[in-house]
Length: 186
Ligand SMILES: [Zn+2]
Image 1 (cartoon, protein in one colour):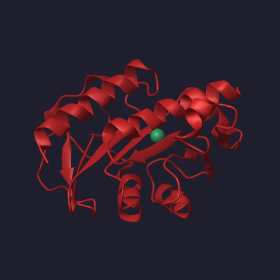
Image 2: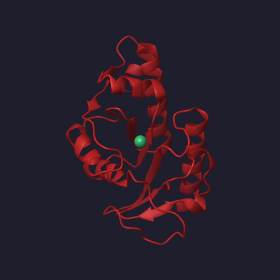
Image 3: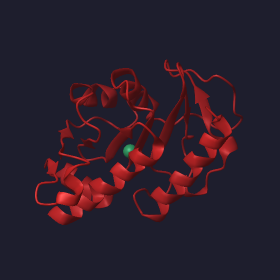
Image 4: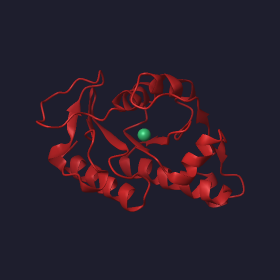
């Protein structure tokens, strides 16, 4: 895998998340599996609309940095990303965002489904709500574990959503679809 090209693509997807208002300020995080035991992940505390490839971090599937990157730390949600890679063999990319309408559904603990929205039904059947877990803690991977690997998108109660897929474009596309479904249900 061309890590440099992947880094560029992560920055582009970050800009799309930000421009589509699926994240605000420094919210959200993105990772791509770049090897058997390696991912590239976005840094903590940086606006996803203004990232450059040199800000990204290479980590192993144990969450350890493979090289130092002065001034940048891996996303605080890295444990959630790692849990997806460990439990979903087909997952090569994970996107986490706070799509506003879908997040409102998570506050009311309402499962999203694509029934009646046929153009979306082939992408996502249902998006369950995982029990509340404090963002950035070990509680988050524990809360999503029971729903892996049978889903490709989840809502985190009172928080936001992770999506994952074979590649980054598809994982991003699922995030757009979640918000689209939520708007259709609102
Ligand atoms: Zn979040």
